[in-house]
Image (cartoon, rainbow, N blue to C red; front, side):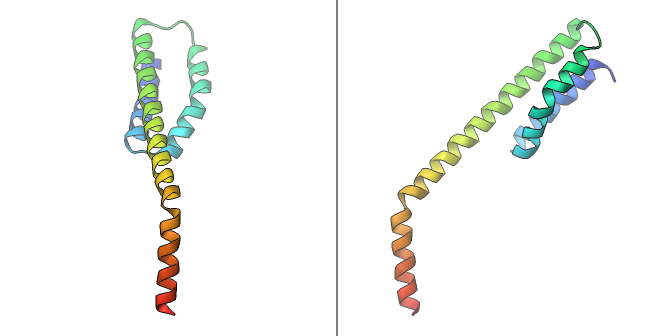
Length: 101
């Protein structure tokens, strides 16, 4: 497979996983990225088209990292809300428990 096509497939994988919020796949892609790029680089100097494909891969990777950061921020906010409302939930649970008894 041509290096440009292989790099394009890597970029598409990052875009698809980020768009689908498939964090496990995104982690696997990120873990495999360095060895795959090293294998591609071992084939010789990069052409202009391959360098352009690498730039698109970097952009896809950066976008995926931003999606991860956004999801992490959202999750942190949700956990903070849950922590802040913990006493209310416990009071509600205790009140519901005594009403059914």
